[in-house]
Amino acid sequence: MTRHLKIIVEKRPDGYAAYPLGLSGMMVGERDSYEEALENLKSAIAFRLETFGDEALEVDTALEAFIAEAGGHPFLLQAASLALWEAYDAGEGNAQARYREAGDYLFHQAQPVLKDAWRLWTPEMQKAFTVVALDNMPLLLGQRREYDLNALLRSLPDDAPELRALESRGYICPEAQLPGGWRLQAEVMSWRLAEELRQALRQGDELGAWLQTQGWEGILKRGKKESLSRAGKKISDFLKGGVEVFIRTAAEGLGKGMTGA
Image (cartoon, rainbow, N blue to C red; front, side, top):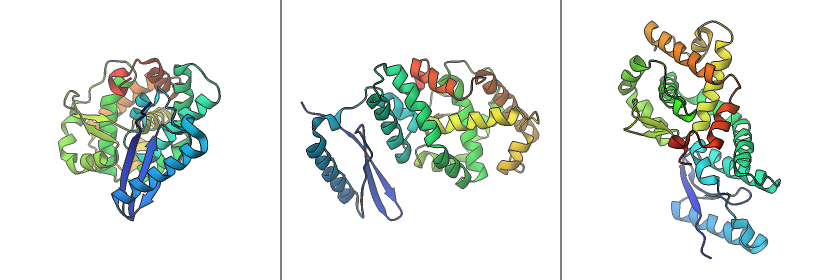
């Protein structure tokens, strides 16, 4: 039977890297050109097939849905794929349970990468992603948005360069049907953001200290700060059980409009 693999080829400053999705284990093809990286990966896949047989190409049925959590970020895609495989290899036969286990694994394993990515973004990029995430989060939770983001959404066109940078990194993509015009791709980054907002609001300072830490004091006026705080509080109400609420909702298919499940 013919099987088809999804392969991500990423351009890097020093060349190209190719990653497969759905194989047990992690591998990468790295070369100076797109074609060479792809051929290098094909050789690695052929070797794996020779070594492990057709079982090396067994793809978890939840992988397609899980790609939404990883977006276009190659490391996150590989981590998502590996997480599903480990849940499968552990003998978990229920697809939703595998999804929950893999989501939890992805969230915690990806923390250093997500933290570094966020730290390297400019404050304007962080703000732009936060607005897009807050516009998307209720859908991810199977809820209607019950907070006013209009002031922040109206300012998004001012962040066009930052939005394009986030799109090029695989974190967001255009979506005309959403009020803000953007959809999350790497949903796991929004999980991390929601957890940060929840923890910050527990300190009871209306996000003041958190905003100062991000270096946003000069780019958010008072009205927009208040709008952000209200949105954060509402999301925190949804997330009383922590980030696991996102994972459970995705596993149960309530957020299928965003995950493609």
